[in-house]
View 1 (cartoon, one colour):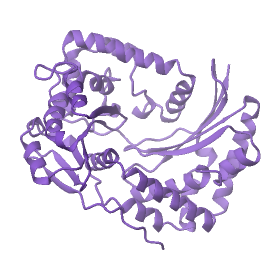
View 2: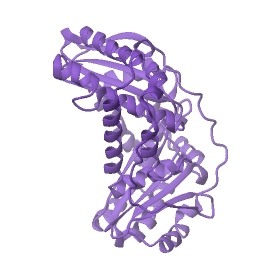
View 3: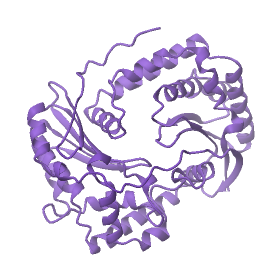
View 4: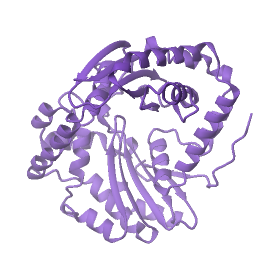
Length: 418
């Protein structure tokens, strides 16, 4: 078995503030920048009835500021220091980040917790920002590709939270109040349900002092957190959809995969989807795009999620070839169940995943994101460990996993222009 080379970083320093908030700190010598990120397990999956869209809406409201940091002041100070900031809400988490020149890191340690942990949620701001969220929702609903993808999730995931739009439901957003949002924030933004990560150029001891003196250390402990949702069960079936303004037909297929915590099994799924649909010499791309030329593109991605991961295939093709593409994809997937990947295929897939991980870890922001999410989910490990898992797989060991990608187990959606 090939042993992958290391990534050249030191071991991240892990500790916690006095309130229990976990920290992952990775100094990178000679880096001119530093990235500070705050993570919270308050994604859309924890929303209760009548709260759909609250997690994402709160992410917006955070940037409206408070008495100490008025609206726009955070962005102005970050940008004036040469930095950038952003935030994102997913099914399982929400995170906020600031990338700054290393000299401005003390300012980032002061501003980010002030912004994220002390939202004022004023009524007039709430009403105005809700219109922004509703416009974002309308834009998403106006995109036929987004409509198709959301329909696939709804069909596959049913009543599970992963089947709902992260942006929320218009009727519920219109009925939500600042008081509900404040209660949501206080329920979920707690020390043991959050994490802070930092990578780049900084002094370890100095940073720990800065963070301990920041509002991060005032975050209350965890109490009354909602129980986790049951595991996801994908509902297989064949469905059809017609959409106006859709330029090309689409084959969408979705399978369940091991939850994110099952790291070894999920690494095998990564290898299988790479063998199938990554690069010109992958099975699906070579057959359908390079040889038969019946698809414009074909992709297959693994989305690692806490309650059950998703494997999603998308093939874009002319409408009159959609059934043919579906049949060809199904045949290739079944062939994989009968015939292990060739040694050259597996070697190529390992190399692609290995290089992809290395390239991703070259960026200071990507490093902080990797550390923050892993720390939040209590799965922090050496940065080289994903490489080791991929290299442990042998072709015959992938046989059972290939059966999990049987076409009959997929939720399949045939999408045509109307």
